[in-house]
Picture 1: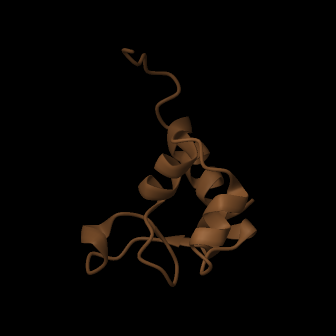
Picture 2: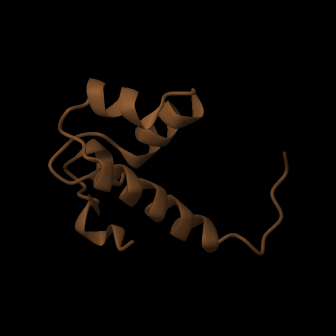
Picture 3: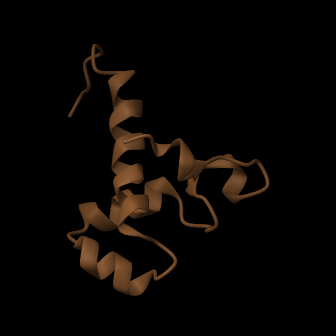
Length: 76
Protein backbone atom coordinates (compact mmCIF):
# COMPACT_ATOMS: atom_id res chain seq x y z
CA UNK A 1 0.00 0.00 0.00
CA UNK A 2 1.17 3.51 -0.77
CA UNK A 3 0.73 5.44 2.47
CA UNK A 4 1.55 8.80 0.88
CA UNK A 5 -2.09 9.59 0.14
CA UNK A 6 -2.97 9.19 3.81
CA UNK A 7 -0.02 10.33 5.95
CA UNK A 8 1.66 13.72 5.94
CA UNK A 9 3.73 16.01 8.09
CA UNK A 10 3.22 19.73 8.58
CA UNK A 11 5.27 21.81 11.04
CA UNK A 12 2.03 23.59 12.02
CA UNK A 13 0.32 20.33 13.08
CA UNK A 14 1.63 18.51 16.17
CA UNK A 15 5.08 20.02 15.65
CA UNK A 16 5.52 18.14 12.38
CA UNK A 17 4.74 14.63 13.61
CA UNK A 18 3.36 12.40 10.85
CA UNK A 19 -0.44 12.45 11.04
CA UNK A 20 -3.35 10.98 9.13
CA UNK A 21 -4.40 13.62 6.60
CA UNK A 22 -7.44 15.60 7.65
CA UNK A 23 -6.93 14.77 11.34
CA UNK A 24 -4.69 15.66 14.24
CA UNK A 25 -4.16 11.95 14.95
CA UNK A 26 -0.48 11.08 14.79
CA UNK A 27 0.90 7.82 13.50
CA UNK A 28 2.58 7.44 16.88
CA UNK A 29 -0.76 7.78 18.72
CA UNK A 30 -2.54 5.26 16.49
CA UNK A 31 0.29 2.76 16.86
CA UNK A 32 0.13 3.23 20.63
CA UNK A 33 -3.56 2.31 20.56
CA UNK A 34 -2.73 -0.95 18.76
CA UNK A 35 0.11 -1.58 21.23
CA UNK A 36 -2.33 -1.08 24.11
CA UNK A 37 -4.52 -3.83 22.68
CA UNK A 38 -7.14 -1.80 20.85
CA UNK A 39 -8.66 -3.53 17.84
CA UNK A 40 -9.17 -1.91 14.46
CA UNK A 41 -12.90 -1.87 15.19
CA UNK A 42 -12.42 -0.06 18.51
CA UNK A 43 -10.23 2.57 16.89
CA UNK A 44 -12.68 3.16 14.06
CA UNK A 45 -15.61 3.40 16.47
CA UNK A 46 -13.81 5.89 18.71
CA UNK A 47 -12.24 7.94 15.92
CA UNK A 48 -14.86 8.05 13.14
CA UNK A 49 -12.73 10.33 10.95
CA UNK A 50 -10.40 7.37 10.38
CA UNK A 51 -10.94 4.67 7.77
CA UNK A 52 -9.65 1.13 7.41
CA UNK A 53 -7.47 2.36 4.56
CA UNK A 54 -5.98 5.05 6.80
CA UNK A 55 -5.14 2.44 9.44
CA UNK A 56 -3.46 0.29 6.78
CA UNK A 57 -1.53 3.37 5.68
CA UNK A 58 -0.34 3.90 9.26
CA UNK A 59 0.99 0.33 9.31
CA UNK A 60 2.59 0.70 5.88
CA UNK A 61 4.24 3.97 6.91
CA UNK A 62 5.61 2.41 10.11
CA UNK A 63 6.85 -0.67 8.26
CA UNK A 64 8.63 1.45 5.68
CA UNK A 65 10.22 3.65 8.34
CA UNK A 66 11.38 0.56 10.25
CA UNK A 67 13.00 -0.68 7.06
CA UNK A 68 15.48 2.16 7.31
CA UNK A 69 16.84 0.76 10.57
CA UNK A 70 16.46 -2.97 9.93
CA UNK A 71 20.21 -3.48 9.64
CA UNK A 72 20.93 -1.77 12.94
CA UNK A 73 20.76 -3.62 16.21
CA UNK A 74 18.18 -2.49 18.71
CA UNK A 75 18.69 -2.89 22.43
CA UNK A 76 15.68 -4.28 24.23
